[in-house]
Length: 120
Image (cartoon, rainbow, N blue to C red; front, side, top):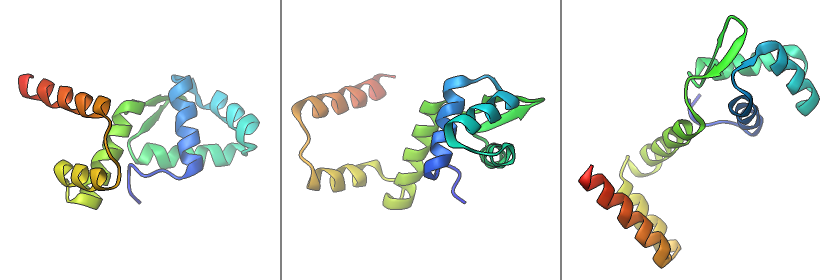
């Protein structure tokens, strides 16, 4: 199981937690029953999976994030680069730009990121 790869329902569940946190596990089960038509046990099983991946924690019935949504997205991107391009951002950009032409705005934004990285 890849820690930063979520199935469709795991992703929806994670989004709900990020939106509502801190949230009691009881409230979470009620939300999931209403939103997904899940039984209480399904919610706890899903929560346990995401806690084992160190994305969330359930501390005495209060569910909070161990990773913000942005941190998780960054980790997903890093995992993708590692799996698909041996961790090489330049290889990814070369492959990406062969299939999609970057706009001037996108190029400028990437350049600003690079310049900021050099300065920082």
